[in-house]
Amino acid sequence: MQRTLLTVSLALTTAATLTATPAPARIAEVLCDQRDELRERLQMQYGAQMMGQGVRDPDTVIEIWSTPSTGAWTLVQSYANGRACILAMGVNWEGLGAVAEPT
Image (cartoon, rainbow, N blue to C red; front, side, top):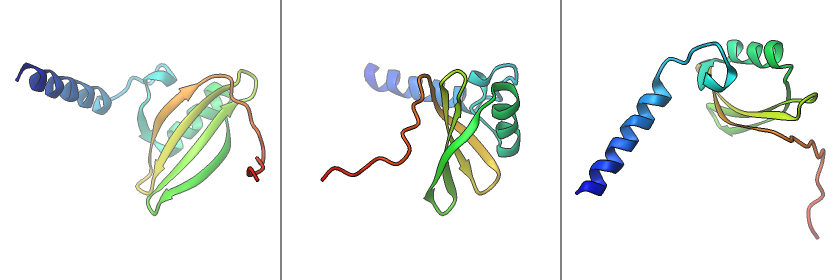
């Protein structure tokens, strides 16, 4: 019973954190925003460039953004309704170009 309450409490805390309105001060605080605003912030404040994208499903596109001067990268999921969310961020991005399939 205690374990279940702890799990529910953790899930509710996580959900509240993810749905809270982020402060616009730092990119790490932005989880979701209008795609145009998020794209502008990545480009203008962080010098990021879109390195690639792919369709996840009919309403969702996954984008990889990278800042060449720092090697920082950001994984963004964009939705058909105009919203976009940062799914992950990291460092040491290495663009590999086309990778040959193993034979």
